[in-house]
Image 1 (cartoon, rainbow, N blue to C red):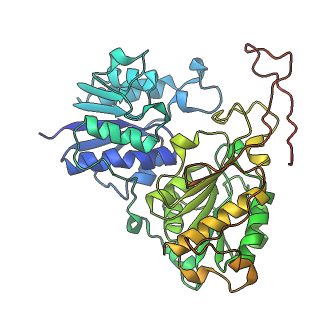
Image 2: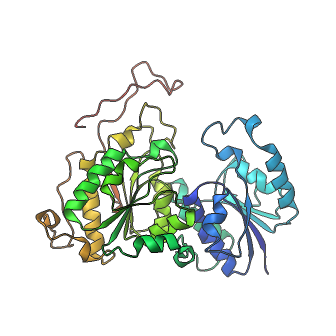
Length: 412
């Protein structure tokens, strides 16, 4: 029986790529699917899912600043949306957030069945509260899979985030890549939230090291506010003011993406292009780019990490103390691993001594000597360091969490 399903995904680009699992499962089952999201939801998802119907809504509780200033929310747009959605008479409403506000919205629109991740404060608002199969440490993709299982969509146990790359083909990117003969590495050094940005000078050092070992055409994509433009002298091509479709197109046609913990990493994953991302204040278990092609690099030095972008210090030390000397061995070894697995062509390697460091004959990838502070971890896709942790001052109490000293790092 065909159902009318409403999906709530009110957040960013990465979150929208994760939602493609349920969208695809519902459409394959013959259901009609609608989605409520920010204005960029339509721009990102419509080329892949042209039958999807969109409702644009910028929820007050998704703002980075003043999200609990209820009197500043756009209540007129909220009630207009509510009125519009109630007229649709949804059979099913779904949210992947264990957020009582999402659960209340699903109840207010009158959806007959309401699926969401369990939350003790709002369980009564859901007709089908869903428990995470692997607990609260599982990735968001696994949360969506659990929702697909609850909705009885078949074949979704191994489903991946997916965008249909040919649907985003653009004349601007065609023209940009037309004369490029080398393999393409794209650098996106920015992030919507400033505390997620690895310092531009660190990216500069990494690019200089990469040039010594690998032969590639570098495309630089600065942020709309200009962050990253200082790296333009290192780039072969600089792409400013990209549309969202153009951003997907250039990432999807690149051989490798260097970036931060931001939307482009997830766009690369959805296009099956490898990404190497610098992680700082967010939860890597929940939000890393999904799949074995990718590698994240992080410094686990702060007891408040993940702080989810609300840093307690004058700078995000989890990123500013993640130095290029620590990151380079991770990038070097991962790129060579991708070459060994034929994910990246061998033509990326320069025939220089720098490209031939200590090859491990058993796996065919670099076994570069790591810094002494490196701590091996089980996950092959995570490079992790632990240094002397940030500690509270002796007079700091649990009830005064903002009174911390600026940390001193050993070996930094």
